[in-house]
Amino acid sequence: MDLNFQPDVDYSLPKIKVPGGYLMYAILLPAIGLFLERYAYSAKVAMIHWALVLILMPVSCALDKRMLEKYEVDTITLGKTYLFPPLYIFKRQALVHKETALCIACIVLCVGAIFTNGFVKGMRINNDIMPEVVQNSSFSQLNNFSGTTLTTIGECLKAYSSEELKWTSEKADYGFKVTAQGKHDNKSFSMIFAVEFDGFTYHDFYITDILENDKELDKDSKTEILDQCFIKYEKDKKGSKGN
Image 1 (tube, rainbow, N blue to C red):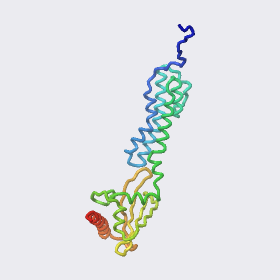
Image 2 (cartoon, rainbow, N blue to C red):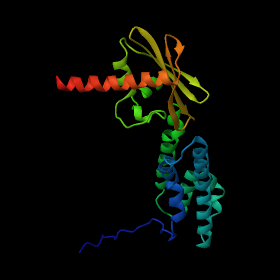
Image 3 (cartoon, rainbow, N blue to C red):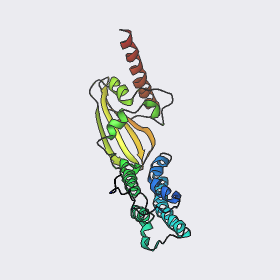
Image 4 (cartoon, rainbow, N blue to C red):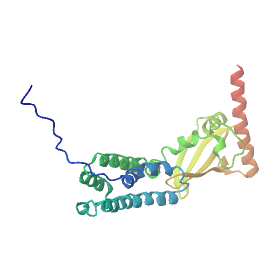
């Protein structure tokens, strides 16, 4: 028998048994915000949406603090840290002797929401990438095009033009104005697209004008060119498959 044997003693403080419901709301709100953001149909709605997230996080922490008081936990050291949720979570968990790592989870989700929300993504939409966005969009995405097709605008215009297309983009009050310039039957043409973008999401996408030799075409002439452009591409595509 080992007379020097000493039993292991756990010197850690006992955990205080309190529920953590409100705390989990505060931690998960940024992730919930990112999920619900996809249903926001305008920048104004998204602003209200994220304002609610910013308000509800400290409110959840304040409700959690009140709950701790009902469980007779001395919350004087917490003060008004609920106004800064990550700090509150850290101090709260330390107070009840539970996992303070939840603070890190909250910080990670907050940082993720800050750098991946629609407004931050919208800041990366500029004149440099808009021509590529329009080229890679299908004709069916145009508001003033009826029908269904997976054929992209860039493919159709490339087949319609006898020379390499020149794409330009400029900022407009409604979003972006993108112009494709080319040549068909020895006549120069310009097709102008309007992309309505409010800094958060796209709204309308349509062709505003078509110019031929710098002359704006009327409605019938525009329709004729659009039909010819689209049908010609489809014929060429089918013909190439048969060879």
